[in-house]
Each structure stands twice: as C-alpha cells, then as structure tokens.
Image (cartoon, rainbow, N blue to C red):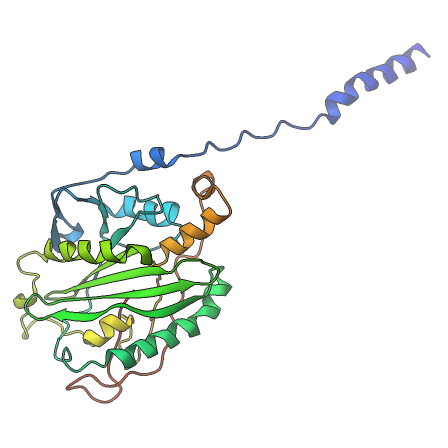
Length: 325
C-alpha cells in the first residue's frame, strides 16, 4: 500500500511538470527604419556602375546604393517581389526612402544591341498607349494568381519625348493598383548606347510628379555611358543592332524580339507607393515588413504576351518590339 501511495504521489507531483507547455520562442527583434537605413552603404560623388558600363556624376542632392542594398530597399523596404537584377539605385539625399515622401531611381542595363532611332518622328504614342493599357489589363489574372493586386494604366503623366542629340528618351506613366487610394508614378529615362540601353525608372507617387519631373532632368544630365560604350561608338561592322526601336522601349517588351510585344510589364517595380500605402493602412507596415523576411517569394512575374505591333520604319511587317518596365 505504501508503495502504491508513493507512486501515486510521485505521479501527482510530476504531472504539472509533464503538462507544462514549452516556453514560447522569443519574438524576432523588430527593426526600425533608422536601423535599416544604417545598414545600407550609401555612396556619393562620381560613381562607376557595375561592369564599367556607365557613370553617375552625382550632385550633393543625390546618393547611390549598390545592387545588394538596392535590393534590400526594393524588397524589404518597399514590398516588391524579389529577384530583380539592378545596377543599383539613385535616391534623393534629403528624403527618407522609407517614408511616404520617399522615392528613388532604379538603374538597369539592357544589352540587346544598338537601338536605332529611325522611328523617333513617326511613333503614334496615343495608339501605343492603348496597346499598353490592354497589355496590363490582360496581365492582371497572372498578377492575382501570384498574390498581387490588379493594376490599371491610367495614361501618360508625361508624354514620351526623345532628345536626338543626347540619345535620351523619357516619359512618365500614371498607374493605379486595385484597393489603393492614390495612384503611382513611373518616370522613365532611357539612355541609348553602343550595345544597349541604360534604363532609369523613377518610382514615386503621383503627388510627387512636379518634384520628380524636375529632379529627373538632373538625373538625365549626370548619367552617361563610359567612353567606348556611347551611342556614337557604334561600329556597324562588328556591333549587333537591336531588333526593336524607340516605340518598343516605351511599350515595355524588351524581350519581344520575334515580331511581338512580348514580356511587357514582366517586372513591375513601379508600384512602391501603392504597396507602401496599402500596408500602412492596416498599420505598422514597417515592422511587418522587417519582422519577417520573405523566404521564397516568386522571383518575378511571368511574361505577358501582347498583340503584334505595327512594323517599325524600314522593317518587314510584324517585326517591331517593346521595352519599358
């Protein structure tokens, strides 16, 4: 009997220990915007972009982030899908990029050959805009399947314009994301070079159009290819000619090389403002963004095919292409 009682007492005393829940893991430390920015490596002055393809002669009003840090801002700070390959970002020096007023210029390079500008005076930008609107609308099904809100191209925030002397093309688009109270602004610059195009996309909100328009003129001025890579260095005997013209650069399908505007809007980095505002509406967007890292999100959006474009000047029917985002 003593043995039975001792056993029961032992079990009674040990039961709470056996039933006690394991302590919850400590929550991951939340990163503030100050801590996040402190971990970035801002650069100023004369910048040579990766690959020595081009230079940025930055005034004191701008800073540069190399590719790795640019990716942190795009993905962790602004909520864009991971996987974008860039040459870095240009950011205004006096604005917190994580704030509602933050904006920046994403820099990439498309080495698809020397882009002829023969079609500069013959592009019907109104018709092109209609095609672009249809392309984005058609791509919304894929966007929703990947967990992103549908988007609408509202129109030109600034109509396309080409500087023949500098071989620089620029325009701006106004875009809307479903559920957002404000529209996004995508201001674009394309610098034509010997073997490809330097792509500069400014990401901001429409309320910043005046500031961005003014600042992007400065960005255009301090951006240039290095000697040997400039437009005038093209050698028709040895260098490849791109399979698309200026209309394709505006339309957005850099990979549309088989007579179609393909892969248009494949990577839409233009919606940081909409993403930021959407998260802020449910509160504490910054802590939510930094409290957990996205492990294996989609590496980018799938290509969207669009109807064949009109032939560019001097080309056979059905051979014209497009590149924008």
